[in-house]
Length: 476
Image (cartoon, rainbow, N blue to C red; front, side, top):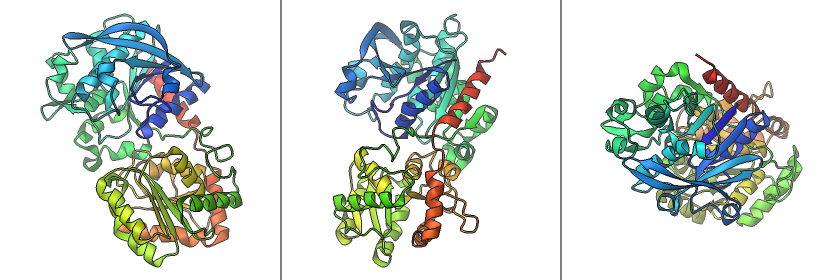
């Protein structure tokens, strides 16, 4: 089985969110399961120099972008046994950041076409092209429109994974012909209020669609979570699956993690040493027995920040807790947490920045991990928190519902604390329930043991993807 992953970002080369973690970890799990898997990414300016120096040139080709041809360099490096190819074009990718440019439609039209044009050049004929999110979503449509009659491409099948349906890649109608080189017969498959919707094209033209959790695959078939595509997703329900994400359990392992204060495995005493180190680093009072609640998140509405800002003052005033937040995002939330830190300097640390090292220290040093999301396609943070023994407090949505199970004090089952309604006081009461069990050692040992012993690897999910690859590749 040969599979090529196409995505806009991938760890450790370039990352803005959970998509990069998936592209960094899932191919390794597939390789261990016997799949010949490779990855192809844009070569951004922001890729660290140490990786750029390892890239070896493969070939230079020209890529059609509508009526014109554009330069495309192809480079390769092998990372932990997985070949990774990079599409080089300074005009499109030699910029700061990844997304947010006015010509993103042209930039990723080029990338999608370049992936298909590159296959003969890299001498790789995949059984399956696995495309991720809107940035790679028109590959299946281009395959049908330009390449299917070519014997090299005739048997290639496609899987399209939706990581977040909110971001769809909607561009003017002219993109269809001017950039993708497709005629009007393809417009219906990608039409969205008179525009071209890249993500819709991926749903319509791929052989199978997946989402990053079973619950999210059901939620997006409703008007509330479907963002205008729920009808289409219901129509494709027989070709839609939800497969929960995993994490790289070798990279994220508290027993070997050199970035935390003290390595540990299933040991609450050593975890407490990490808590003390975190309190000292952040300038909080060293208080080993005070519950430390954490958030590592983008500071945006979808992460439930409006719930947090409504009740956190009350909790910090009345409850014996400490709270740390790490992340960047909307200015209104950045400012709110900075001001709250000024009001509660002994209880709140607001780290308005991105830091992988500090995030690991927070996972290792916190007792409870708060994720009150409005929606969460899968979520990686709760899996990392569980891996490090920080007990999640989450709303029952998307992948949070699939991976965090409410603790039952009678049976001793469950690895976290959950609430259903998107309500600030439901969140606060659930968090206080978690704090209450933190202060009851016999129960806290049980819930943390459940967290430590869970399987958060990609092994099971990788087998589910392989089953899909096999199913769609079978002769009709």
